[in-house]
Image 1 (tube, protein in one colour):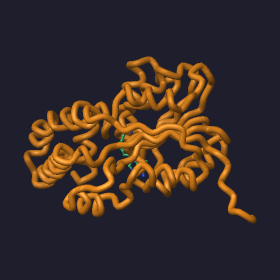
Image 2 (tube, helix red, strand yellow):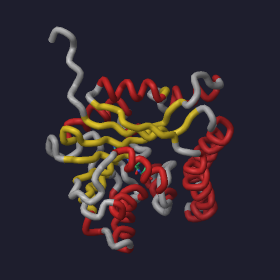
Image 3 (spheres, rainbow, N blue to C red):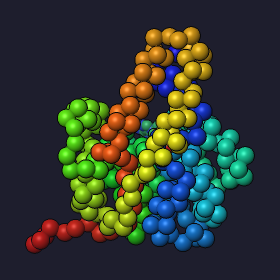
Image 4 (cartoon, protein in one colour):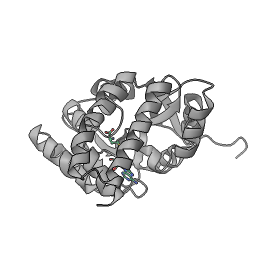
Length: 258
Ligand code: SAH
C-alpha cells in the first residue's frame, strides 16, 4: 500500500478530514446571506467525506450541490452518508481536481471549500474559481491563517516549509479584494473545531490503523507526522488557526486611467 492509500485508509472513517464544525459551517452560511429556500447551485470543493456537504444539503432543501474531491474513495463514503440522511438526490459527486473544475462561467451561486484550498494555494484558488460564480455569487473558504502579528521562530519555520502562503487575515482579505471579491465575513474556527472535532477522533483511530498495517514503517511514519502536527497545534494554537472567509463576487477593480 503506498503513502496515499495509507492516508486514505486513515482518514476515510473520519467524520471530517480537517478542522471544522457544523455550527461554524452554519454561521458562515448566515454570513453569506443566501436565501435558504432558493434553488441554489453550489459546489463543495475538496469536500472529503462530506462534513460540510451533508450539512449544507440539510440546511438548503432546494439546493443542488456538486461534491468535488479528487479522491473517489472519500466520495463513496459521502454518497453512503447522503443516502442514510436522505439527501443523496441533492448531491452530485464529482471526482476531479480543484484546478480543473468542470463548471461553466457564472454557473454557481455558492462555492464552498473547507480546509482544502491550500492544495492549490489560496491566491490561485480564489483567482481561478471566481469565473464559475454568478455575479453576486458567494465564496466561502477556510484557510490556515496567522492569528497573531508575531510568533515563535520554530512555528514560523514549520509553516514556511509546509505552506508558505500562511498569512494574516488582513493579507487574505486583501487578496480577495484584489481578485474581484467583496469580503463580507471572517471568523476564526474555535479550538474545539481542531481538537474535539478533528484531532481527538483522528488519534482514536491510530491504534486500529497501525494494527491493520502490521505497524509498518510507512504507517508509523504517517501516525508520527500527524502526532507532530497535533502537538504543534496544542503548543502554538494561539498563533494560527483556520479562518473562514466569506466573500461576494464583485466587479474587478479597474486601474485608474484604464
Ligand atoms: N472539506 C473536508 C475535507 C478537507 S481535507 C472537510 O473539511 O472535512 C482536504 C480534501 O481535499 C481531501 O478530501 C482531499 O482529498 C482533497 N483534495 C486534495 N487535493 C485536491 C485536489 N487537487 N482537487 C480536489 N480535491 C483535493
